[in-house]
Image (tube, rainbow, N blue to C red; front, side, top):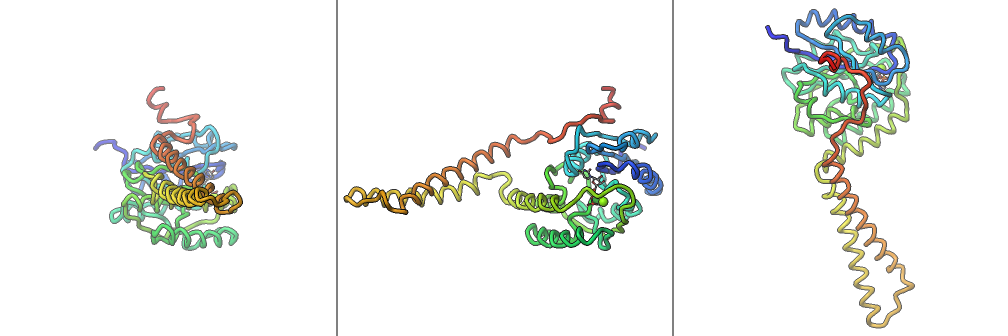
Length: 313
Ligand code: UDP
Ligand code: MG
């Protein structure tokens, strides 16, 4: 039998020192039953506690750790894990013991039918201050993206490898992975998963994250429609505005030629404004185009990487 990795588990970690070993043990037990060759990738997203030391203390060659220079957020951590993962099947889960490893076999089974499968925390053990905004959020995201799943926010998800290699995450984009995948043409399934209350450590998500998430929903929507061609949106609006501006100016010029006073007309201001704003929009579209086509570098810096260590660097 080849020693090809069949399954990669990715766990983003930010200050979870008390959860690391317990989660590893429980994963170890379940994965032994699953019977696939696997790797567990912890991405230490700038923890300031002993999370990194705890992960390093695990004596198991299948456990990998990538440590970030500082805290870049869950999206960056997942993105990094996606890049590193070698398994044909990739599963992401939170490192706080709220996601139960016993769901892994069900995820794998469901992947026979879909390109990716998202977890749905139908019964959540989180305060209402979190579940209520989250419900609104899921509704809005469903409405805007057209992806008919119940829970976008759940960190517990499973993918075929080809899906994760084709998704680029930053900002709060991890909330929209199903939408990003769906937009790429992949099928998205959903299974209900059991959710446990957080016992150790603190949740890092507050209202301000939700706000950022909302702004990213706008970006995602924009990306879905105009990712490759920002100029097509900005340029279209820009030319329309400029054209109206020029039209007004030509009209005013005509009045000026036949000897009318035009200096005190509000229309003059409007004509100039529209022309200038329109030109701005076209330039914005062009800049967007340039950025889109040159943006390929990661947003994070890696401080420690067990994959590099293995290669003898
Ligand atoms: N996390 C991370 N970087 C961050 C914030 C969180 O890697 O900046 C990790 C965290 O350690 C956990 C997962 O992402 O494993 C989910 O975080 P949390 O439990 O705080 O979110 P919640 O379950 O409250 O939505
Ligand atoms: Mg949590």
